[in-house]
Length: 250
Image (spheres, rainbow, N blue to C red):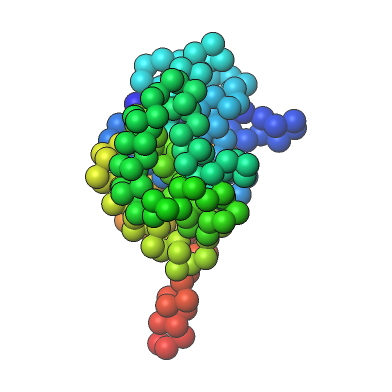
């Protein structure tokens, strides 16, 4: 579905990506993981055309992502960012319906789609008339997901969508998101810095370091057959409290 060929990107003097090549298959969840500044969010912005590569090309469903076609391509992509990115002056209903109204959908069609999405995401229908400040963090992310799904896109791009939530809400949303991914069967590209979250969602995990792809594979492959000592260091740095307790008890 998505091909990235020889893509490099710099911000000023800082190199975000160094001539990377990637293929993102359809119908799977691909997770990008790595330290802050490794280039994982840059990849999502390149796919959706928010920024342009300095060199190389990005293709979506065989079409090169360029400024002259990016508007039409974005209608086939759903994009969710950390903390939701909702417009504070709009209700949840109006946030979700924004692009559909722009495209001329009827009020009846919009209402029907919103009812479907509310049921899918377990968002209470009475919450649709509230503004973002009246919603919890978890509810805001559900609204952001509904907005991303409104046009029934071919791919979902999620940039650390759960990173700002407390652990219990995050765990609940992880379960709901995985259920939604499986129910819809869509191509999903997710960015996280959490290796456990990557393993929970990912069919394929791509670990980046300093703008380069270090290793691709399942979580089991990254643990058992690391391509570089950094892979093991990255995984071990995210020990859970239970891991620490088990170690201390030995």
